Length: 449
Image (cartoon, rainbow, N blue to C red; front, top):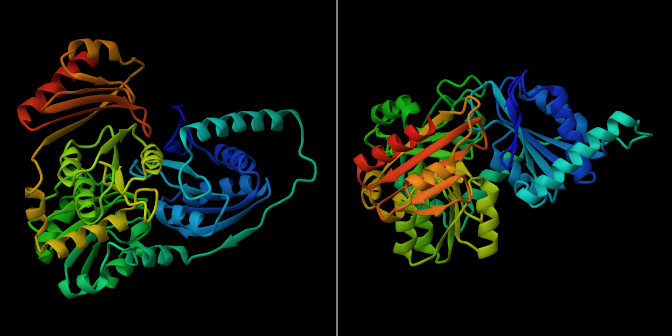
């Protein structure tokens, strides 16, 4: 047996091992009790075990008197949008996002359409422990049973809201007639991509757009996983390619030459366009590229950094009344749309940036500083990370210990932190000089193995 991962990124595990219908029912019941009944919106990605986990979680919710609204296969931002717009008490997105097919998760969404904060999460877990203790020692007497309802219109409402944003000009985009290839990884974006891109006047080619949950590539939209999209962009003579993850909160870009530019640049480019239209502070997580510092400085605004996790960025944006933010994993947050990452919205923003600037995506990339980022996954195998040893070795840098350890130099940085979504350690380095990035990665890896 592995370990069920419970964090700001949800309750996540391997189906049949750490995540079972029994566990999903317990967490669903505890969540229903935690929010004290009311309406709960639930959507899921296309994993074949999604209906099983959905049914279990929904049963737990209904057992506490919650009225469950099933919005079907939907992106995580669509679920967040539905919770906010319907003034629901909460929501659950059943998806393991970028994790492999054997994983699934319950992403818990509070009123207002944002994930539970760290403090809310702690209260929920205390509630979960008390709830399960109570269930072992007594029986519920005549519990109120909630209702079940299906609504399949929320994905289209979400698309219409994107198109209606103040920073998106459909008339201009329709005149541009961009040629677009979208890789939907056979998941949630498959059924709504055409609605978005056709509404923006694009000539569209879809690949991997059968929503059967059989991921044709590793689900994370990292450059190494986008070779098919790169080929499709070139053969279709497209202006741009967009790759999504299974729950549609991340998006990565392939330029017109068929080159995957890296998911970090979704955030940097999206921020740069939005900050050219509106001035105000921005927030990104500690693991995101230092290119974002350049973008903020160029716009003359302050950039704040937070721990990894969408809700941490969201909370900071609320506090500072931020204009834009996100995470460098392909997640752009525009609060006027949602206080959450939204891959479809990010695609519309990039198209708008191309239209307004009258530049190709490769030209926009060249306007940003060139850095090299190295990301490695280190298996713990029962060992603990010695963060003090890392800090002592790199004592010449500025230490930030809010999320694992981050050491910042003038021209580079490194970070070591426990993953919120997998039982691994994540090692990231970034530098303007490729040799420096590789040197830092190699030196840290030596200290950890």
